Image (cartoon, rainbow, N blue to C red):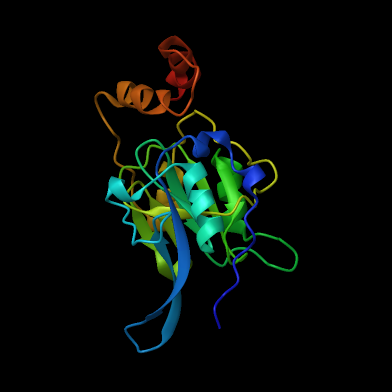
Length: 221
């Protein structure tokens, strides 16, 4: 049976994500696993219903157009393609749907990483959108943990987790998390990291001049 996604709560999706022009729609599609079993995948599509790609900017759109497409075409939801200005943490099977309680790892992530966090479409996981020093994407599916820097899209439900409703400008250090889950060190992004961050974050933070951006995030680089 096709899963039922949590109904989207548009009013809770933060402006910092809305202004990024990398939105897609998505729909459930049944796929065959290597072992022959079936799984419901979240297939990205354009607002018009054509296949979308996380590496093809021509298939992305604005938040408003993605929402319109979802409503008009009856898609299951909308999603945001990650990039250098916002990265994502995906924690699967970490939430009790009956009580809303989170696993110890999920609680630790929310305590240590500032970002916009929400419940996944299934209600059993959480996603965190944040500006980080992540050097490369990493996955460890046996424990339900995935980190993505770019080349991936995250579904967005608007079911925000209390205390994590905004996307702050401060760059978050994920070194501790990578050591904890992967037992390895995070590669430091050397050289012009500060200038790159200023350039990347100026766009989403409308109304901020370079001096404001530097004063806000400079101490955290």
